Length: 417
Ligand code: EPU
View 1 (cartoon, rainbow, N blue to C red):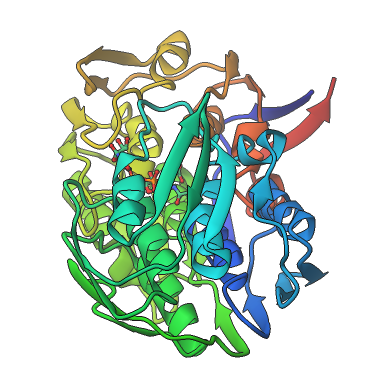
View 2 (cartoon, protein in one colour):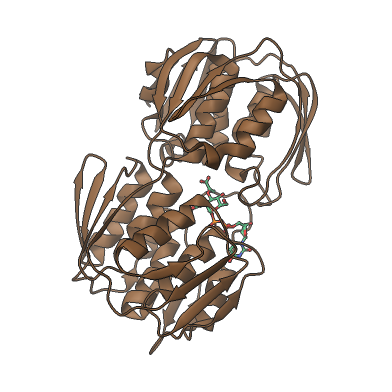
């Protein structure tokens, strides 16, 4: 079992380069199997989710060549439409093979996806969209067989602007007969990245990034390439770290527009941010004010940054109110932060955070990916040593986190025991 050990209190100076976005890459890799020729994906982060998705493509009889952060994928000979439970349950994004295989083979047999346990993560909106396109769904003990003689474009309305359902519906509809319109689609930048990839292959998708996406079906998808966009959540995590410990800490390779809600909130808190063309320079200020934050779908404040920013709020003056509205159980970091000295109470996914409180190192556990990231942040500002268990959650989503933080002056290492 791996653990992360941190000696807190070090000032961080230098530059951290942001990797390709996990939540884009994990959709682009399954999307590649829709191609009738070869695809190339650049800037894929080296995280364990990437490796699990490659295993799935190879099992389906596709070929994948990895050269540093570039994937060359040949999915011409994808035969199988079956994904075994031991692979599908390893990560959430295995569900993108539902849309991709349905689009390519008109059939998929797959168990429920895995992923962080942060609430009831239903997939009813995905399944309703597949049905609307003409698929039938058989469900038996958490396993789904989804198939269709043919898929026919239609108008679909989402009850909730789900990121996963928006991408999955694009994947299923891209080779359907006729035109599909998704109303109340999600608008996250990762959706635009996937639509661009499919359009590079010859798909006809318009409106990605707005709440109405139109997909005109095509028969053939040709050779194409795509670059994964920079990870706005990884960037946000390091920007928050800079707000707490930065001295001219430069976070580079970011798209600032994707981070507007965070940057505006940090300004409200009193953080010193200098914008550069390709990044931001962050300095820890003398004084930080508490603020209220509510997580919302994009372009609102991202749920994936609520846990990391909860640590920053423990160091702000006054009571901050942090409300999580997307998931029903995303406060797994709170008991551990309190064990380190924070003063946080949670009621109905609303955290009341009183600050500032000094934090002290402790033995803590990463209950999920972003809870783990928040414990890394807490360890970095805490006095003495913090040891984090179950770090596999963190390594699923943050490429080279230990190396990146060490390179700017943090005292952080991974141990095996
Ligand atoms: N929902 C339903 N029914 C559905 C789909 C979603 O009720 O059919 C509900 C979920 O239960 C959840 C909410 O809608 O409460 C949000 O779900 P959404 O489908 O938008 O999220 P997702 O596709 O499951 C992706 C990211 C998450 C990120 C969310 C929101 C991936 C693999 N996951 O999840 O990332 O929080 O969008 O932006 O892309 C993370 O990176 O830590 C993470 C959890």
